[in-house]
Image (cartoon, rainbow, N blue to C red):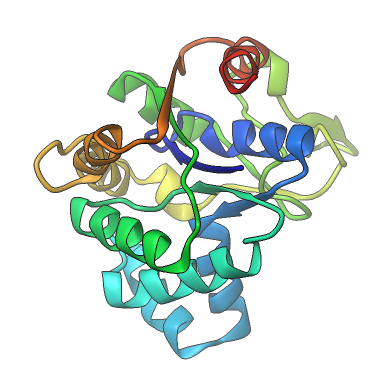
Length: 223
């Protein structure tokens, strides 16, 4: 089973992707993690991507697409949930073409909807675990609030060290990312609408609900 997940930054699609991964034993492929792996490894593509990510800009297709398609091919047998790509209509068209050429079916389109202002608040309060970025930690939500250890906030799941991405605290960078996502002409919403016109089944859930309620909605529709 292959799933393409959409949702604005702050909607919790990474968290839900981790839940689906655990349930179905598939790979959760998150474009940001692919970028971080390349950046950490000092690859040529990673260094090029780094400058765009730090400024809150969209990483160009000629950098992003080779990274993502290489990873999808490795997960072809297990199945995958792709999170964070495509982010534009052009990327959606390129991904659709590549999947068809490789014989990989796209079974479900998962869309997590969320008001833009709520999404911004969530971004600014989230914290990243050094051990696993999919461990949900947020200073404003009791259900996923970090725990205190020796006077410091640590991951509520594994007690790992927490940090905040610099661009998560930059409203200008957040607005840039959301401008891209909510753009229905050439941006991510245009990509969502593109895939809604394919043969894939559509799963739409309300991202303002609690994590458990959202995951239950998703599982009910996946069957």
